[in-house]
Image (cartoon, rainbow, N blue to C red):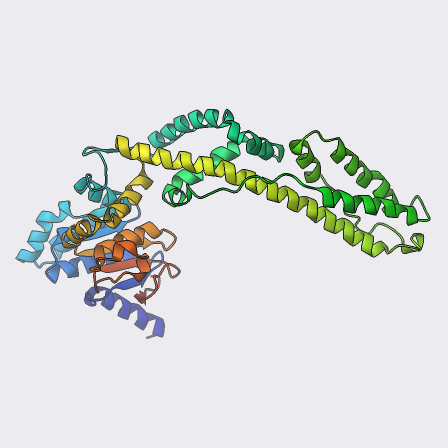
Length: 415
C-alpha cells in the first residue's frame, strides 16, 4: 500500500467520522468528492442532526440536484430503515441544498425587513439584469457627458485614446463587485493637476542646442536632435490647450538609441546625450500618467457613485441581481443591533454547513458561512478569519489552493 493511498483512505474516514472538527477536503476532479459530501451528510443525519438543519452549498443548480438525489438514494437504499433516516427523507425537500445564491435568497426571504427589503422582492436573471444595467448606463452616460465637472477629465481620457465603451467596461466591473465599490465611493478625489512640462521643454531645448557641438551635420544623433526632437518642441509650443499638449507629450519619440558617432562630437558626451533623451522621454510619459490617472480617478469616482446609487435603487424597489443576494445576505448578519439576533437564529436553523467547490477568491462565500457558524457576538465587526467558529460547524471541499488557514486539511487522490 503506497503512502498516497493510505492518506486517501484516512481522508475518507475523516470525512465520515470526524464530525466534530472543521475540515477542508482537498479534492480534484475524479477523486470522488461528491461521494464524500454525501457520506458526511448521511453520517451527520445518523449522528442526530436533522437533514433540514444541514446546508449543502454547491456551485451549480445541476450539481445541487445531483447531490439531493444521491443523498436521497443513500438514505433510502442503505438498508437502514430506522426512524432517523426516514425522518430525514421526509424533510429532505426542505433542506438547504443548492447554490450559494439560492442559500442567500433563503436568508433574505426569512429576514427581508432586517435586510431593508420589500417583503416581496424578486431576483432578475442574467439577461434581465443586463437589460436593466444597459438602460441605467445609457441614462447615466448621457448625463455624464453633459456634466461640466466631468468635461475636462473626459476630454483628457478621450484624447489619450479612451473611448466611451471603456467607461462602460469600468461600470460593468464596478457593478459586479459593487459592495467593494460602495466602500470607496465617497473617498475624496484629488483635483486634476495642470499639465506642467516647463522642465521637460527646458531640458529638450538644451539638448537641441548641443547639436551645435557636432562636427558633421549628417551625424544621425545630430539629425535626430535638429529634426524630430525640434519638431516635437514646435508642436508642443503650438498646442492650444492641455488636451492638445497631452497628445503631443504622448507622441514623444525622443530616444536617440545608438545614434551618433563619438568622433563627430569632440566637445560633447554622446552617451550622456542619449541618456538625457531617454530620461526626458520617460518624463513625458510620467506627466501624461499623472494627469490621466487623476482624470480617471475623477471619472471612476462618478461611476462608483452611479454604481452605489443603482444598488440602492434595486434594494428599494426589490428587484435584485445575483450579486445583490450575496451582499445583502452577508450584510443582514453584520447589521448593528439586529445582526447578532439574525445570526443566532440562522445558527439554530442551520447547524452544519457543507461548502462544495470552495474558492478562497470569493470572500463573501466564506463570510456568510463563518457568520452563521460563529458563536461570537462580535463576529459581524471582524474579518472572517478572525471570528471564532464552533468546531464541526463547517466542512469545505475545494482545490488545494483554496484551503482557509487554521482549518484541518485532508486530501483525496484521483480515481
